[in-house]
Amino acid sequence: MTPATAAAVPNGRPPLAVHVDLDGVHQIFRAHGRSYRGSGDPIFASGMEAMLQLFDDARIRATLFVIAEDLRDSAKRAALKSAVASGHEIASHTLTHPNLLRATRAEKERELVDSKAALENTLGVPVRGFRAPGYAIDGEGLQILAGAGYTYDSSVFPTTAFEQRLGLPRDALRRPLRLTAFGNIVELPLPGPMPLGSPIGPSFALAFGMPAFAWAMTRAAGRGVPSVLLFHLIDFAAPLDREYRDGAWMSLFTLSTRSEHSKRAACTKMLDIVGRHFRLTSTQELLAPFSEPRSAAAAS
Amino acid sequence: MTRRGVHRLTLDDLPVLLQIQTQTLPDTLSARLGFRFNALFHESMLSDEQYLCYAYFVDGAPVGYLSCTPDTQRLLRSAVRSRMPRYAATLTYALFSKPDLWGLASRIALSVVTGRGEPASDVRAELLSIGVLASFRGRNSAPDGTRVSVASTLLERALESLRERGSASVKACVTPDDGAANGFYRKHGFDFRSRIRRFGLTANLYVRQLDTPTAAASGT
Image 1 (tube, chains in turn red, blue):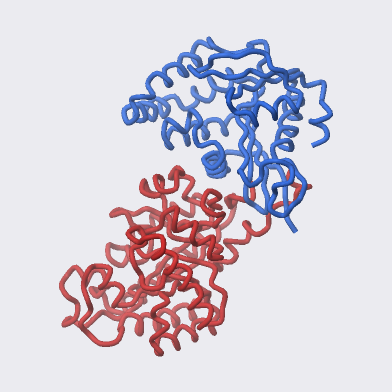
Image 2 (image 1 turned 90 degrees about the vertical axis):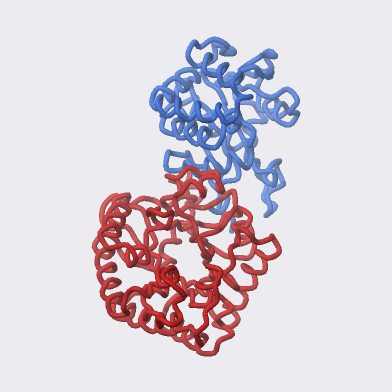
């Protein structure tokens, strides 16, 4: 094992960091080619409140992936400052939540560089991590991230698409690793994939049921490697008013098919399942092996 | 402070090896057969005790690597045998997507199976590949200005391992038009033996006795 790969945990529970993508209602609708006709951002407002309460009760310090355009909204800005005060880490989820695979290099640079600067300047905390909207990252995006001063990315999971984009076999994408061919950025891969090509996560479980989630997380823990559990705000948020759901498709993608109460119960159960197999920790602990390479003397 | 060191790569380090190889030697024979074949090839190599692969790390990131073996024929046969069905499937897929590589693949397969075409068969140990990032080549080119030769350090480590495993001499095949690589081997005590054809490609064959370290080698 070298400083460029994370070690497996032979005995005991491997570490796991909790991440949350803070996609609001406008970004979700936009990603599906629609626009939200209601006012405000009910997913962000109700989701943040429920999420912070749940994590506070469970004593979890998560990493929140923020879309930097949300900083323009004073209510969202206040909620984010409150999250920072509670000890949660802030990371970037781009400036405007575009599909980076369709963006030019200049557009990618703007999304990745400007979002980091905006988050750091407004919230007063260092931004080290990044996740691409829709997990759409490629080699060029990773190089830009490294050049912009990010320490880690967490957009990749073991699929054929990422095998081809990164030139690495699927099995190599099941544990944290340093992407030395892409600017030395550390990748914290998501566990997966689930059917439909998504990573294993609470959103999938809330839409399609808990047994698959429990089976997949047990299997992921069996590998003994550090991992990430990725929530989205829709996992905690109250359902949208029927009037503004824009059909069954958007009901599914905003998880408006479930009540806030049932989501909280399901998320609590998921954290319980995960806690039995993993040791919940911070993202910084997952990164620790990459910041402490062995000395030259000890190396050989 | 810059932290440097040489590590022997294990199977867990497969992504490290694949990435540094892609960065430094993107046109190796295995890489030309596609990334799936390349990954399988290196996975089978790293699983084999006969494969010695070292990487030079600077601040946690590899900047160069060198692979060698005390016995090339034995290594290739044992590595292929350990994953025969996957090799067959991956090679078939690779050749259907790249039919121009049929000739190359059949020559390699024939050589592994029969042992024919093995250059300098009296010398079993071989340096298989050595690659260093462009910004770390030469003695004074490290970004922090530290005087170090990554390639020489890796070579010394490899030769030491081969000596420990009982090898009395080692060979290396080098593309004739790669002036830097030919110069590197000559500087480190390798003698040009002959111009050979291997897997359908022309190469310069160099051999070095392992019990006679040279001034250049010991000084780097």
